[in-house]
Length: 247
Ligand SMILES: NC(=O)c1ccc[n+]([C@@H]2O[C@H](COP(=O)([O-])OP(=O)(O)OC[C@H]3O[C@@H](n4cnc5c(N)ncnc54)[C@H](O)[C@@H]3O)[C@@H](O)[C@H]2O)c1
Image 1 (tube, rainbow, N blue to C red):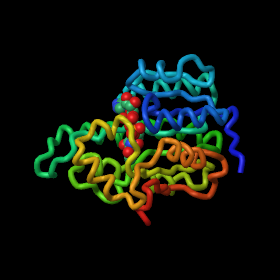
Image 2 (image 1 turned 45 degrees about the horizontal axis):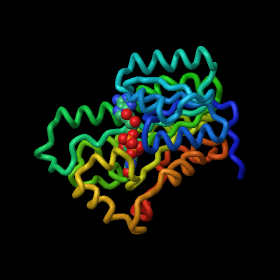
Image 3 (image 1 turned 90 degrees about the vertical axis):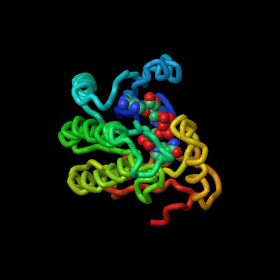
Image 4 (image 1 turned 30 degrees about the horizontal axis):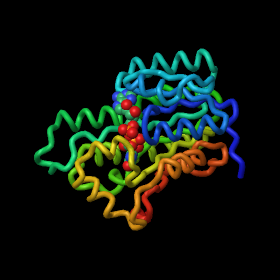
């Protein structure tokens, strides 16, 4: 199978770091022009430099108006958006029991992890419907399938992403748009490095392959999900857990 994404236009959120950055590079390697959305404009410029296939957009994706304005301006210029990848994510406070969580932190995590995916998908889907084609990938997590102890806000926000993926997959199944999620276990990125050691050990101990996933493994799976070849799977959460989730 050869994957050709030449002349495709993508938006990747959270593209300055970790999984989003790896997926953005993988898409560019395969011919896609990537609009890279991230809060951290400095990091976007540092990692990608001058590249005509890459457009950095410094943005807070919890700001719905900004998201709508940026997507509108991309569509005005490019006429179409083929691919949306939602990689923005924060864990919020972890290693804490549910009765002790700060509800403001839960709201913040939902805004970043869930509402941002609602905003970006609402902004791109009308254009994809007009073109009868689209590939959307939301980054969920094994935490959303299983509920990691100590991670109420994160786990529940990722469960919401999985639920939204099922809804959107069903709603647009006949439109040429596929909408899927990916649920990694642990991949060493700044998101994981900033968590308490005890919480990271709890998560990695549960992986049957006894190792973390790699950025390349995440990007390769994403490349397939985002390709025209992925034409008969929608509303599905792809596994990336080294054997932890067998369902
Ligand atoms: N790394 C893992 O082990 C793992 C496991 C399961 C799921 N995930 C999910 O994968 C996705 C990517 O995670 P990662 O590990 O690459 O994280 P990361 O911390 O390396 O990257 C996240 C990026 O999102 C950006 N960001 C955060 N809030 C933002 C906002 N409001 N607006 C715009 N940009 C914002 C950050 O600046 C950062 O560049 C997340 O959704 C995460 O929950 C990661």
